[in-house]
Image (cartoon, rainbow, N blue to C red; front, side, top):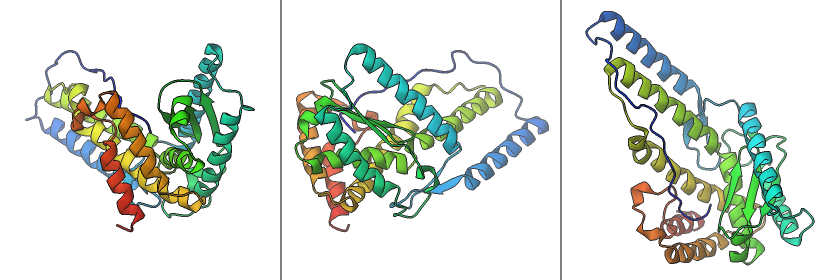
Length: 284
């Protein structure tokens, strides 16, 4: 949800190896069969995102996705507890986040918006607050949301807090984490084909701006679009999303985030997000 951060990418292949002879009929048959089989799997794995009706491929089992999210969430909370930064559940800030978050989660589980909904049924939503100056919030699969106090200091009303939490809950509803894992698996497979079939090592550093980062920006915009609809259905003012991103944009400018080129950003710039939110809000 928060400010732009440049991700770290690793290069998976360090050396080149001779590829198979492409003139070999056996090699061509293997590549054709693998390509056709992969295409069929991707077609059969398509799911429709609620509210936006965008179709995307998901190869990750929902149960496994939630299990990974639960494990990651427990590790995050355990680390915060060791550092003394985990805000107690009885603290007013934590109670406020839980109260607003549960209203948003109830809308997510209501079944509205069409699309694929099975993964949000009977989720155990959890909302936690960690003391940190970071102006950020994030979610991991399974409905586990973490908000930093730096962001709580920035937002004013419950409507603005709802805009933040609805955005994070929208990521869960849209299965964005599973989509990222699916894309990573597909691209890894393509790297292997290029490496072993053609002798071409494709560095992961080149894949980031070409595949991962554009999809990340698309997911953030989609979460914005879904989020304002979730907030409105939970009886919060969806216009508060505009004021939140205005504040985030100002913080981003002070921190020099505007110097990051657009194609290297994980999130769209705040001004673009505001324009899109206004379009949806006004029926565009």
